[in-house]
Image 1 (tube, rainbow, N blue to C red):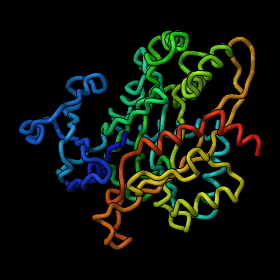
Image 2 (image 1 turned 180 degrees about the horizontal axis):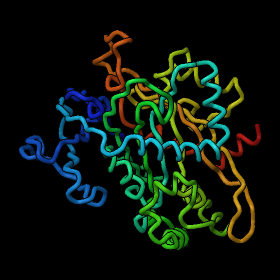
Image 3 (image 1 turned 135 degrees about the horizontal axis):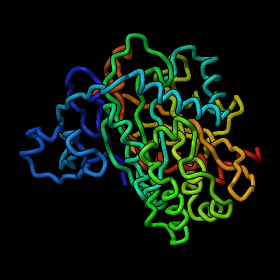
Length: 380
């Protein structure tokens, strides 16, 4: 399947025209539920009832029949921005502490490009059962003004994902990372009911063990704590044989799976992702080679790559200590949409670039935590 894209017009303080979808004839369009566009046309609706608390967000997703330009309202940040960024900073601190490669990459890029490093997106993994799926971590971001966008499906991996666009936040002084432009959020979940009975039994056991831990998914991520405790090594092995994603989530919980450097926002030659990849490989970093180091969307406008995940020692509940995959860092270059290619470079903003995600790219990026990629890294 192909993913679908919307421009980032929600992110700005004035209403802008949404750009034409470059990769799908059936884009997903986001309207206020009270909009005439929602009420007067014949379209199929996807309910957000399970994800968005009743009475709090008046939005619907509409599967459109064409890709015409549509005016979108921006969304504003809700609540305390300083509190929100503090939570993100805690998540980032746990991530960098557990993943020395990611910290080393950031330091390495900073040594060449002294400008701010902006995050394109932050990603999380979840179990789609007992309320521990996408909605468990998404509700934190929705509460602060993020907007749900497209769904992506990965049948072979038994996964689905949603991504969320950030609210508009004026920045007087652009800073780096968590303190820079708010990142997109990408949350995936394992479709547990498609797993074997043995795997389902293990996952249900631990999600039930967490009690109401799913209500505090963001807190668990910020603290670096797994809400269901440590599993048996044999259970980890059982899941790993069937789904490396499932095994990763069992031992990492709601930890940040990866952050993504927005390469096109760099100022040096590293803004070109091919140059960035070459620089990182020459600096000794191992990049995910699944499908080639550089992953390119069918429209050629979204270019992505990633490191191979770090491994950390993990003590299982039966006293066995083994190395398990942790997290990694990704890189993304979003090229300017065709209709804006004549803009002077200094006038190009993020909403002029390709938005959204691509199933083919993401499917290969998932492999950054796979045994095959980790073995390749260890053998090098």
